[in-house]
Image 1 (tube, one colour):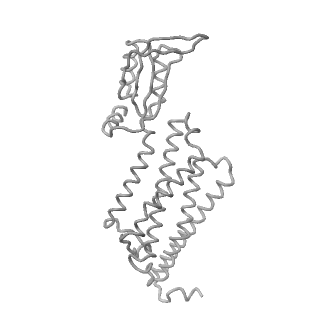
Image 2 (cartoon, rainbow, N blue to C red; image 1 turned 180 degrees about the vertical axis):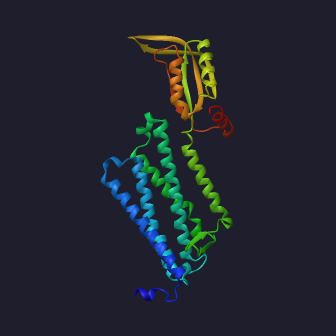
Length: 300
């Protein structure tokens, strides 16, 4: 039966290509299954990162049971060629490849955001990087990737059979719309992760002299790019069993998120209060040139 499906005049090159594709399929499927089995068997791995790894493993399985079998069949049937350039079969294969590539790109980006939060915002890690939130990002990535690649199937976009790899690939040079959509998707992901790169910190101080001293010290240490000193702040607070009221100044400190921990330590060293106020939050947007300047000023 198998001999009827295979061209009897196959060359050694075609057979070797089919063997390599088969080995790739085995590695892809087995490694994905092992990863899924390991994460499901160990409860401590079933966290946000575990969810992302499961998503990548299922993506590999989809690729292994859709694209790779078609490539394997094409290598054994040289005349098939996915029914030629721009055929529906070729377009569907190209569509799946773009969807899976984009999906994996997004997932690796979310893993990078997760690791960044774990390293530089550990106090906020448990609140920000939850398992439920990671599932939402996975769903968002899948939906965005699927819609982004739709023009491959429904529009007049050129897809060509690539014999060396036994795959159908999109001709990017003749598909400007999809390239534009891909750039837009990358920009959207950048905007979603953008707030993690820059931060503003609020610190109250008792006098103008202390404000200038702290500001100069942290700017000289490149822990902040700019400090705004706002006078006329009245603080009303409860301390040692009574209501207190003080005239203070407010420092608005602009820096990168990576410097927040060092900045807080520096404030604790320089501030005259035993328990100084230090509140920080992410910057959600701003001028690209200004933020680039902010990065340059806080990079040693």
